[in-house]
Amino acid sequence: MFNALLVDKIDEEFTAEIKEIQESDLPDGDVLIDVEYSTINYKDGLAVTNSSPIVRSWPMIPGIDLAGTVAESSNPDVSVGDKVLVNGWGIGEETFGGFSQRARIQGEWTVPVPENFATAQTMAIGTAGYTSMLSVLALEDHGVTPDSGPILVTGASGGVGSIAIALLAAQGYEVHASTGRTEETEYLTALGASTIIDRQELSEESKRPLTSTRWAGAIDAVGSHTLANVLAAIKPFGCVAACGLAQGMDLSTSVAPFILRGVALKGIFSVMVPRPQRLKAWNRLASDLDPKLLEQMTTTFGLTDIFALSPEILAGKVRGRIVIDVNA
Image (tube, rainbow, N blue to C red; front, side, top):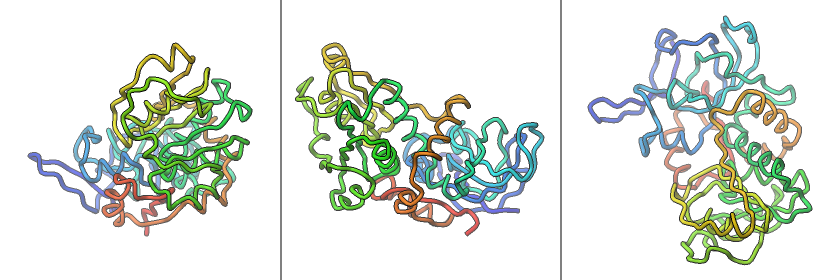
């Protein structure tokens, strides 16, 4: 028997609780993992609070990330004792996820923990940091370089934003950070941001399809009016990587940024990224992300703390990254 955070819905009555379950309760898979750490993302907050239809089947163990040690394996590419991480592939949404002391998954979903990272550090990065890296790669692939001009990061105080700032600054980009928590200026500056912008400058609906150009590119974790206003201020042939919807799923804009300035909008879908690109992203994280900065933005909690943390992350009140020690 082992502990897991289980959410369920029976006759429209939602429950979320820590329960003891057994291995026979786990889904099919060719790898069994002794989970050491997980993390909490916006999606996880939605699942634990039942605030949005994230969960596709009931009951469910949320947690779209996990890291630990392989306990059993029938997959020829994964060995007992391997340190692995898993993020995406529908865990915590369609199949049991990381808020559990054991997990059974498909071996092809695993990524070896990079040699210079401990399992806890990979969960300090988690889906948020992995998404940040995919976003940086999207800008690079489009040809946006440090010489192109400043890069804006929205939702800067959150998990995606914090790691995006650190990654971009490490590569020599001038980083502008938009946040609703301007009291975090010192924190954001320490990560590498040179300019702090109050999110209210970008969060209101605007009727102007184009504004004065300000940025060569952007990583947007907010969506809605913010994304529309960011697109309107991108320099010709710039690029915006859209990876979140903290403000909303809507996007009220025009074709003007695209056909009058050649701006590119790239969607970041981290869940089903093919393994080669996934490995590339994690290898870049291992080489580019300063472990000391990662430590500065990380706080560790236990399984039972998830209930209180979930509404906090949905309200945008969580700074940086949270690691969940599932055995604490």
